[in-house]
Length: 272
Image (cartoon, rainbow, N blue to C red; front, side):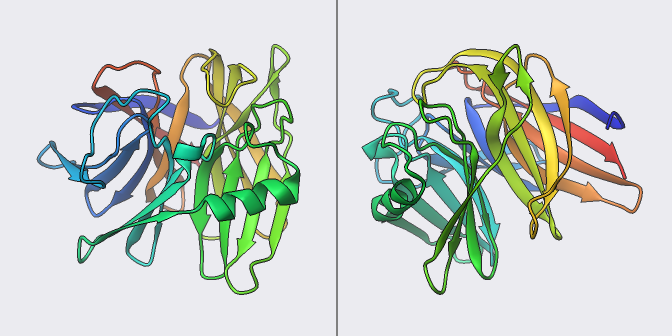
């Protein structure tokens, strides 16, 4: 598939290390992996506001202390924000009600431990980078960077608490396999981002070798396509922007692995 167009759409000052975003009604809700704020950016006015998720929310938190927000998902008018689970401090989930503005915090270490036990992933290798929620299940996208290198999807059933793990192999760049960095659901199709990063650590960054966009059917997990979209960007956030019969457009954010409080938002269009 080569019928896509990627372009820089706009930049936002005041937020860095972006790792996930949700577009809804002219607002972008954005998370950063080194911040404990939820950000809202109004596209019309270009105003960025910060929503405190904790009493002591701050930016550019030291790596050893950060909550490491890597996933944001929208379900029933609530935003769900997940830590990656890659250290004990990264086992938090926050919800933000878009109507009431209510914030709830929950430690999900027990859930993450169940995922690790089921898949035989070690404590150091769990690395949740994307989440999708529907009426029946939670879908957690594991970025397989560690020694066990298990890249795949956890499916956690809300009713019976059953767990499935589907291992997913993605293309390699110079012997380095691409691994999940985000995913969203559009109707019954999952669109996902993946990055090839030359590291085996869920903690330390490595050389970026490129980013991919792919998709598969939610029911059968059969890959529909995967396409390299950049040789240098580490895209970590994906959201639906608009869709017609002829084209689907996404907004993407990238983690530039610096402390600079500036973020570039890209637009990716695909002809259907």
